[in-house]
Image (cartoon, rainbow over all chains, first blue to last red; front, side, top):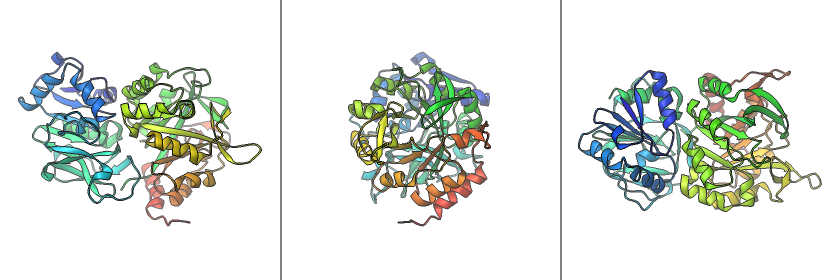
Length: 203
Length: 263
């Protein structure tokens, strides 16, 4: 069972539509009692870091979600700002992150080796999986839709699941124990994205 | 490698899909949801929905329609039309749109871009710059209210203002070329392309895939937006939603990858 976290931000219905067409059970979770240890949780996110986190923390689901992820090791997939929220913090905001993955979110221009480039990083880019993770199974030509100006820097490079380049490598996907984050939008990435969401459901 | 984008542009008026010429004479095309389902299958890079009946009639976004569109779409979505408040911006983003286009409000209320960007992030705010050659001077000027009001600004002045206010993308649209299939206005595009630090997308006049190749090879990383090309087929303009297949697209993108910079 997939539980799509509906806290007023982002593309819950786009995820729901995809899981519906795949014939995979899903639910939109908007109350703490909708969340259970047996689920795989999707944490969508668009917008600014602080406003997305504020909404999540005031949704009533935050403490249940946090304990499921930390104590019950429920598998969770953060998408875009949903991924960035999993860090300890971000240059974009003041509020403390969820702290599920050790690391920090920085602006593209403040990463090392920065050079002149157009921001935000917008459009379709290919990714290079760093390991043979099942998240990217059956995706022959992995390229996805990105729309962001901030980048996740995991404290341990070992936690990078896939890189992309713009023009220097950055973390396109990260993972730490039961927590996975993707910077791109699988729900808006056609067949590759649908396959990735299917892969997550069988983790 | 980040790819240049090829983007269909759909105009809706009072809930129906229409196509204009030079921003006038809307012609009925069909039901927007049917066309979106076809574009899903064709795996388009992005889709822009513009409600041309919103601003002239002082209407806000049609949330019911936008919600139906967003849940149907498996591709990135942008919406423009009648946005006047940050609340409206936030609400459309929450429906599942990635980007919101702001045109008229850049001039009447520039703080809207700034306030909206702080709520939903700069990456989701597109400044739409509609340009027409002024009748007397022959110079490119920025117009609003569906091409009826001249702001007196040049495209570069408007784009710079949008950039300062925190927009994350510029959509540069030629009113003169709308629906003409006469090719993109390269002079207009070059006036912005070399002077921006934001992603640029261009609209107006695209009549063939060769027009897209010409833009990719000259301007590189850019979004080519087109309407008629992806909606009509043949000289009698039969309605047939279409989009380059993956193998054709790869050939188009190769022209970008191998481009030489023309000064």
